Length: 306
Image (cartoon, rainbow, N blue to C red; front, top):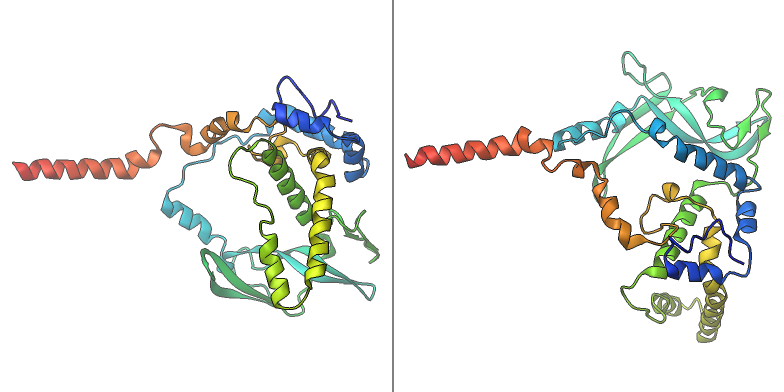
């Protein structure tokens, strides 16, 4: 039961169109369930943002940054320079703990840049294996965080101290990121023409580890294998329609590989050209650094020949 909203046979990749026609359910209904009845409003907001793209775009283009400028920009992120931070802390109200919640916390004085009373902050050093990232430590000692500094998009605390939980307990960013990743992977897998299908890929490695530690027997692993392939056989014909029901726009996915129309290879070059570095044939650093240096070297060589 294909939906006309998700299909445009004249413009879409024919393989994606064929996949969507195999669906035996209406993705509109499933999408409305995923977004808790807010699918129509969500689309209205996306359409408004798309129509106002020129007005919402930044007034100044992204400037080209040299290596030194990038290092200076990164330096502002280290623990010694942070004035504010988003802190995950246990929320207690009316004598009950409601788990970790995010808070917007001031760490240092704006004028003196010294840590506020009750706050100890410092540096640990580069993140192991990722030298460009910096680790720090933060300790609170009887430090008061105002109620209004709690990030209350989902969970809230009223002035009376009453805790208002989110509409749904499963509202969290990891699920959204996973849904985006699945959407991109499934759409691209429908049109990708590279590689090969390896039966039992990665499953054999996991099975070997389970056998080695005696967590599963051969009969149990065979049962898991049969059930897994049975599930894949049922999900495969409707996989594309299921991810369509997530109703992510191309702007939200930010991925050429996950385009709704499936025309990936036709748009990869256009996407690459949109990089700020490709805005000019000659980058600003050439005239500022490399070009003048090369010119000086050539002049020195000419002078040495005389």
